Image 1: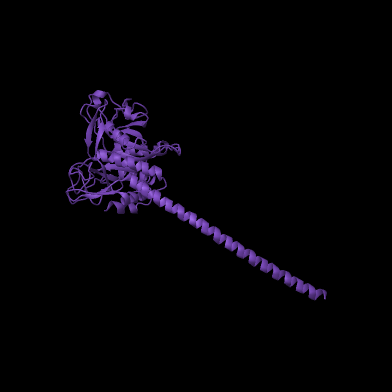
Image 2: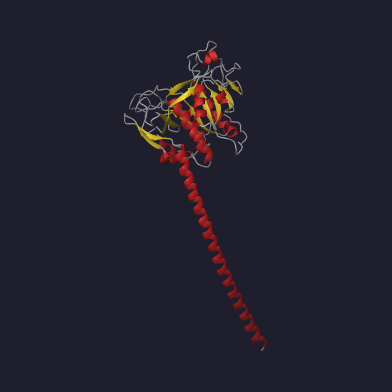
Length: 365
């Protein structure tokens, strides 16, 4: 079923079975934050000074720095530099966090580590329960940190045969996405880089997610970016220099990057227009996006944050002007009604006094 139709049919939140603690509401002047679900992070890099507002380790293994499967606070998401750069993908989170900073340095980062490691630096598997635990944490803490969006660059393409309902059935993840949407937090996943022009990676294929494809620096769709005309939502820039643990940079490319770019821009937009629902913001982006296409028949729109804000500010200005005009019109209508009321009241009083005088004259002769 078409993703947009699915969203239109979702009207109520689906409850989550796990108990969630309420958190303090964020201050009105707090900057927007994005929750990144990724491998690990080199928090020592100057680029992240003042940008990381919380660190959380959520794993299925007891391999958080404290020897448990959950840790919160400074030091929760880092690893020794030898492990961060050992070729097992632990450098990925540093790159993705740098994309957020490069896209908008005013957006803060809540980094959630979801990939564990063995004592020898080998990568441990992360299953759906890791994702749902991380999403549940965001749902419980969104107000405390003013989290407006979630970006997870991991995905897999182990899907069903072509022509079948290819998206794996993961109701726990789906239900959490619905609850997050209703709570005002959008969740972004990558379309994937498998050159599949009919299907997206999981969890981007879940209809309740926001799926992002990869556009190049020339605003064209990358040949590597997966595509599904019924499920892909938007494109965003997928080519950018990213930071490496230790302080170097390298050229990065892929829908992992485009997810971070899109989620960061969304956080800015949502923070500027907090009353707007996810569907209203999607509609705004669709109206203002930059059209793009690929050589394999792909098509879509690249998120254009400046155009979206300009259009909405223009619409708001028109609404303000319309409201001001209505206020003036209402004042005139009320003044006219008041004048008519006073005139009719005076006429009634004059008539009443005339009747009284006439009867007094008759009675008293």
